[in-house]
Length: 296
Ligand SMILES: [Zn+2]
Image: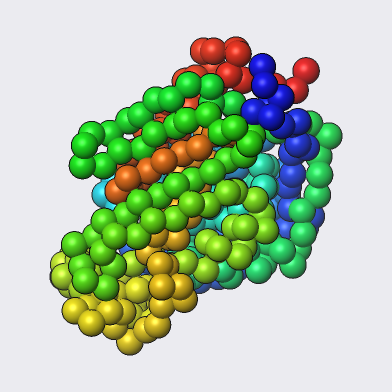
């Protein structure tokens, strides 16, 4: 195999010390206490509902995912944790592979709709390398999921990197067509994606508010696009929307618990397709040993 396609395995990482953060959740509008704890090698990312009698553990894997519009929700039995994608993206951004995330509600804090605050907190506690190596899946041939209107494709990456190329087309004059080529690393994530926020069109925000969702969230905490651009808010990047969609892809790909070496090309892909890609990657990892590199 071409060695350029095949970078050496890195060591798994967890956080150095536990920390806690409180914030309001987006969908349920509740105050949530979230505590991140270091976790042993090979334990992965696991959410725990400490508010429930059984203190249910919910691993962040594709098998625990259920289909819910507009976000990523994980379940174990009758218990769930809502909107995990941005927390997972932040962990992906910091290359944190093992972490226990304890919650006293069924949803994580929304912060400002981006990963910025969490990245600052993770950077300040720091990460620690563990003895075990992180598994890796090297994409060797192209495949795609989705249809003409929206799709996501995996291709080999000749430089041995994880690259995401996202194309967005939004029927709105202030958003329109945006394209981003991003090469994943902790430095690039912090600089290029971490501060990109969730966005909605004004009509979508109104429908959700009529449904009682996001009632406590103001236009300062989520980007709401009116006719002339963000209402009561300012863009952090001219192409903040495509940056956020790229962040979402990385969050959803964390449901496949290994590093991916390849180019992921996404056209108008959302959580449903991102998760389908994570599912396909997981299948490949388990079925085709020539795609997979595991520590001995
Ligand atoms: Zn998002």
